[in-house]
Image 1: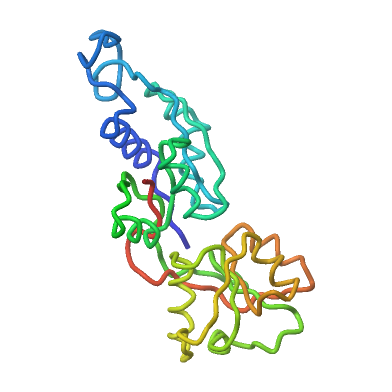
Image 2: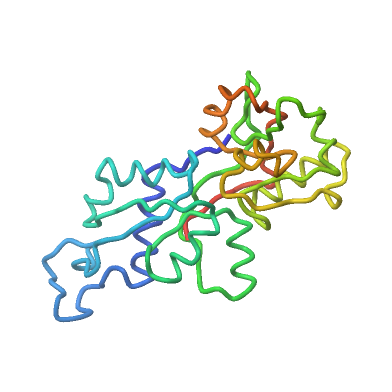
Length: 243
């Protein structure tokens, strides 16, 4: 299960990043500054009030959606817009190209980008990883196989081809950890990138794939595939963040 940050946490992180990255102007920073105007922290007017946030299809983006839809950003003089990214990594080029001011991404993507010297910084938590409680067949993130597959356990994925949205991502780390913890050897598992992982599975382009909620719940009605097992977050603390 991913515990979403409070709307206040997202708002404060966003405003802090906006000030740090020059989206908002401090009082007296230019001719447009008006000491009587109300900006973040009483620092003057916001010169660039339009901000966009890239999120990928997952419940992880609910915090950003609520901050925008319920007018929390607007109360602080910011006009927020959500932009859809196919995977956490797709937010990086949008961010660096100036198409968005903030992007949600998993910590693995962010850490690797920082290690390569990419000029990004984390500004607010997006989701905290925790073992998913579940009464039915699904957790927050789930592995899937075709209905006729002879793969019966996560351990069986040792020699399988697993389609995921992105290699070298948090999902990639989580799946590999799950295989190893089940007694398999993830170093022998093959991975492929597929924008539509369920479609790749159904087309026979992979032996297994993964979904995050709410995609898994929708997939339950498809008789050609079946859930194999939930996947736990391999790390501790923050799993996703706004950069």
